[in-house]
Amino acid sequence: MAESKSQTIVVADPDPDFLDWISGHLGARTVKVIGTNTADKAEKIFLEKEADLLIAEIKLLPFDGVALLKKIRMRVPNAMVILNGTIFSTNSVIEATRMGAFDVLRRESLHFELKSAVERALQTAEEMRNLKETDSEPTQQEPSGDIIIGQSPAMQDVYKLIGRVATADAPVLITGESGVGKEVVSNAIHQYSRRSKGEYVAINCAAIPSNLLESELFGHEKGAFTGAVAQRVGRFEQCDSGTLFLDEIGDMPLEIQSKLLRVLQTGEFSRVGGNQNLQSDVRILAATNKRLEEEVENGKFREDLFYRLNVVRIHIPPLRRRVEDIRLLAEYFLHRQVSKGKSRQLSLSAEAISVMEEYSWPGNVRELENLIQRACVLATGNVLLPQDLSLDTERKTKKTKPISLRKAANTIFNAALDEERKGLEIATTELVKVARENGYDDKSIASILGISLAKVTAVKVS
Image (cartoon, rainbow, N blue to C red; front, side):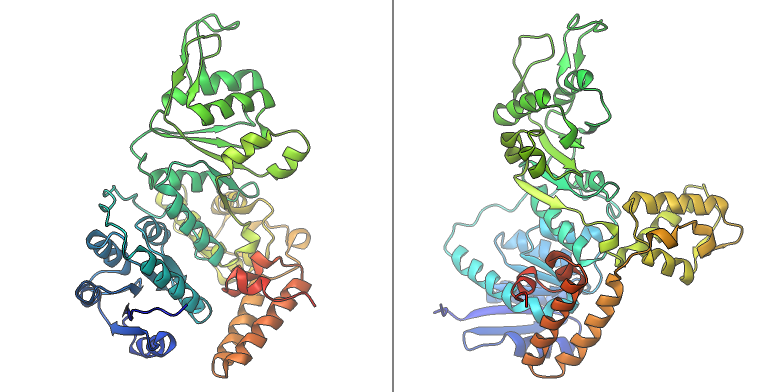
């Protein structure tokens, strides 16, 4: 449906060629594009023109795109802002989404995703135009340092979800294989939430015997059972106004699942051996490496509890599906060993990095961290070589190589961009088909190629 009112887009980017491209890419009879190369000019133009949308590069001067977003949203709480960039820090993506960025896009995917994102943002801006302005969100203390390491498209999606769910109180279910970093994501949600000053407690449901888990969660009264020599406060009481992370929730016994469900429904619980109803304002974050849908079908997990927990789901992809992150993670773990005084100054050789990128990482990020720790102990020189890594490359090397697919995709895309649009669409279709034939699912294909999932699923199976 055509807009009756002309809409204005302000674009802030230091690259004049990009400004020329985006003006032609987005410009239309009812859309006016205004370009500028600095953040302060963009802020001034956006406010003066009462623009409908701001598109900004992360790396701007005299302040960056996230700071520009904050300034704009403080003045116009419902402002539509899309950020883009080549390299993002973890904090940048999470903080931008938390502060209300409509989307955060990778630079190389703009040709495919920008138009649809802009259309959705302009439509949202039009719908909100007549809504009463609300007060901007209260400022919060920003967590310091990168919480999660990774620049892959798959992890960028995780950061956006963290930013969106952090300001809410809904339960979040975090899924993924063992060792991918589910607790790290949980911690990030807490640190960016309004509950960040409250308690954060993590419990591994698989590590505590079932007869003790109930007491651990809800506490017990003196004399409730043998050995209960005094009253004990449970984690729900301890975490009042804070966050409780239930790791390996799929291993929680059914009888305790029912009591957890009651807390989620009513906010009420009682200590073991007690009759008093207690209340606690706790946000629940849960994680599992199991497929809870299958556990429900097999009668091992309550269906009603599953739906209570699965309000928002964040899936963390395995390390073998985000090869771009391996070097970043390895260098981070190596630096941490050195900075803590647990190792002398060491560096990674190109050969060692190549070997790590070809490895399947069945233990995911945890395995990589342990490998770096071991290599620091056993290395004889100042540079870590493949022989220092002790990887079973013969048995566990990947059969498929996402990095090779990405390199091929970039080559084809760059060539196709110089041709007409039809050529680009044909190249995309063929790459998706080849990736499927090599065992990739649609979500992984979208992540590796840097295109939307909708564009992948639109390619029909031949």
